[in-house]
Amino acid sequence: MSAFLTVGNLSAVLRGNRQRVLRSVSFSIDTGEVLGLVGESGAGKSMIGKAILGILPSAIEIIEGEIVLDGQDLQTMLPADRRRLIGATAALIPQDPLTALNPSRRIEPQITNRLVDILGWSKADARVRALELLNEVHIDNPERVMASYPHELSGGMRQRVLIASAFAANPKLVVADEPTTALDVTVQKQILRLIRDLQQRHATAMVFVTHDLGVVSKVCQRLSVLYGGKFVENASVPDFFAGPTHAYSRALLAATPKYTDPDASLVPVDEAVIEAVAAEVAAADEEWRHAR
Image (cartoon, rainbow, N blue to C red; front, side, top):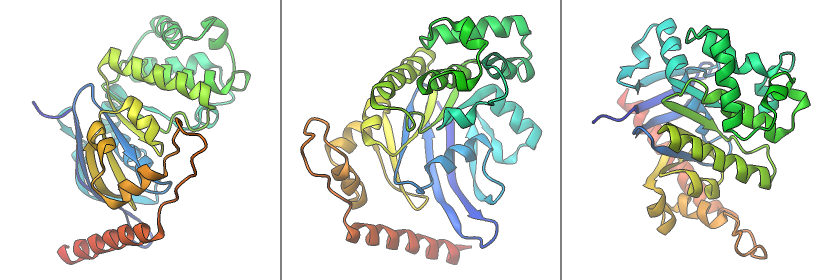
């Protein structure tokens, strides 16, 4: 059986200077599987998720590769057909709920409009579904929340609304773009458990973007480590934590805070490791230019 999502040899460049920002990225995800994309800020994690959903910034251009979603190659589809397929099949949990939600609109239409406008639900059915979802993400008094504006809710409540919105149409794929970064540790734990429970209940394929290896260990089955828009390691989560194979991956794991030993000193990534992986990326770029 073929994977639900396949990304093959995906490369993207900045339109101005043609510098590569995604470098021959390839991976696949089966139905119900969670893949973690891990790396430092600027590694290209969020860019991969946006490329899948067709929401890359206009300054970035995909120049080669394929994105096959549910058996259909998104790169060869007409834009309108692609938007319809993604709207019906995939969803995004964004990083910052305060900027993701429209401050001038109440919560109800921000959950129901996708069901009505894209999937053709009646407004009454969409409202019932929205209330069900708010209950499912453990929001008390969902009627009050539906009538509220985003600024009237706490950060944790806003993130729960975004999760409810993402799962509203039972998507087959969810891209979670660092969905707990803006939350405190206690709320983060609740949100992670909620995402994992919904993902497992609906057998949703998920791309989970994060810089936190601790999060990966809780929600993902596999992970890919990025540096400079290039995968440097792909592994199952148990194999990775048992012993990464790439020096950069080992350095990232060593730099992760040990919550079981809060007094332990933080270990920065060694400059020599950064220089070596940067040279690896530069060599891949040189090889790619010669091949074109």
